[in-house]
Structures are given as C-alpha cells and as structure tokens.
Image (cartoon, rainbow, N blue to C red; front, side, top):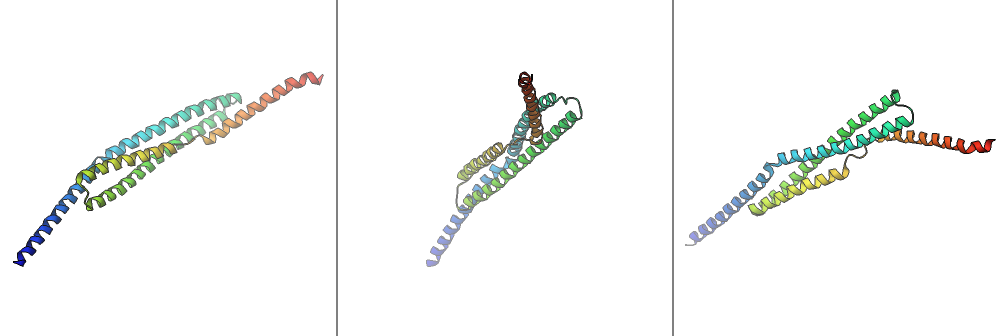
Length: 196
C-alpha cells in the first residue's frame, strides 16, 4: 500500500514540474515575441537620430556660411583664394560633422542593443524563476521602450556639438581685424584736431 502513495507523490511532483516548465516556456515565448519587431523599431530610431543630427548640422552650416561671408567681406577677401580655402575648410568640417553624427547614431544603436540584451537576459531569469507570460511580456515591452528612450535622451544631450570649431577661429580673427581697423580709423578722427 505504501508503494502507491509514493507513485502518487512522484506523479504529482512530475505534474507540478511539467506545469512549471510549461509556464517557463510560455514566459520565454512571450519575451521572445517582444523582441521580434525590434529591428524595425531600431531602424526608425536610427533614422530619427540621423534626421535630428542632419537638421542640427545644416543649421550650424547655414550660420557658419553667413559668418564666413561677412567675415570675408569685412576683410575685403571675397572671391579670392582665401575665400576658396575658407569655403573648402567649411565644407570639410560639415562632412566631418556628418560623420560624427553617424558615429553618434551607431553608438546609440550599440547602447540600445546592449541594453536590450541585458534586459532579455534579466527577463529570461525572471521567467526561470516563475514569472508569468503576461508579466514577462509587459516587463519586456516596458524595458524595450525605456532602453530606446534612454539612448535617445543620451544622444540628444550629447548632440553633435560645434562642428565648425576650426572655421570659428577664422571668424574671430576677421572680427578682431575689423575691430582694429575701426579702432584705428576712430583714433585718427580723434587725433586730427589735436595734431594742428
């Protein structure tokens, strides 16, 4: 008679283990489903970052173009080799800024992918611990959204910076030269009455 009770306990333990394994499998499947469409989300994220970087870089270029135009005009250097060289430098800095923006996009994507993998491993550990499929799917969705938002915030805060730093020196020198010329002209005006 005692042998039957042992079989019942073994059967009950096996059924409990089978149910636990089924729940783990369901939770794991829910987690995997949450990650299925991630490629499209990451493509949209990267496209939005690229658009933001391009918009910022273009605005900076427009400002730098105007400053260069006026700096060259103040110095009487429009149309010459100085203007051509300055324009070339400006274009090179713009291209470097675009590359810097793309590096930022790739770094942000790498950050999201790393955070996603860490999230996935944590969620799988929760599933192994007995989390339900519903709670695992909800946690996965929230974590994935949080990962992208965190990377977006980091990349927008980092931004592209001032991509025209070398050209800025040219603007400053031209403005300083103009100020010296104005100062000399004004000093001559004030000095003439006293020089008689």
